[in-house]
Length: 264
Image (cartoon, rainbow, N blue to C red; front, side, top):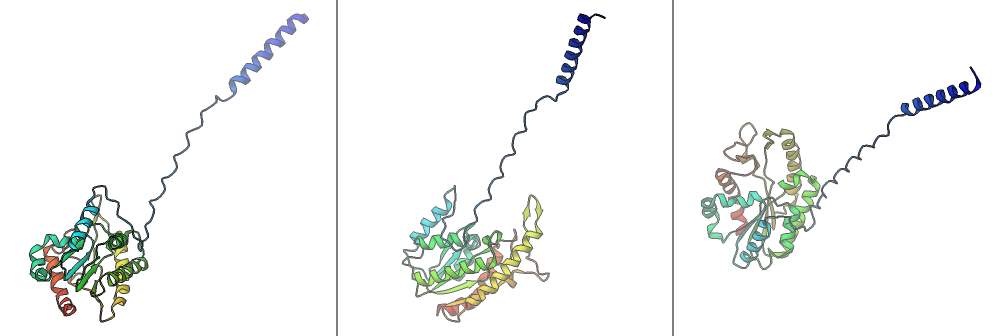
């Protein structure tokens, strides 16, 4: 084999080796797209702040405007709260029987938490009101995100606001009503119910300390809503949160003696 042939073989061999090395390299890959950043959790509202409820349907603002108008007329007994208070509208015959002669006002809005009621008061709902008694029952909607101490502090602020806005009124603070397990995606959520009731029981223990025997009274009627097994009968609260007319009858009867005393 002459030198030229040997040279050609070496060149060919080198090209073959180089090609094999190039082919052996892994093909470049496009890096996978970065995972989207997790959405930031919704801001947790201060239970004692004045916060206007975000309501795309405008119902909150509409009812607030109605209450401002109602406040211009005489009121002897004013109920302040959330959907449980608003629900008196489902039992007008009971409302009229127990309170019709007292020029009553129902300032309840479904879904309200303490911070929303504080906003309502700061924005005029009690201005000019000269009620004899204000009945307050509020806090169950806060139990999803607030502690018992936060709810107690917020309710205390509301009582103080009532006393400042309506100095001649007495305040009847009701214990936050009991609630049972509600369905989440068709399944009863016992764990959520138990957790919320722990908060409610702690809240009610704190609310009881508001009672000064004179201008602020506390009343816990929760046992009236329970059966012998300690659970809420469905005919009293069909959805384990909102009273039926039978539940409102129990409420009125249980509250009547103390309310009568406070109206004197």
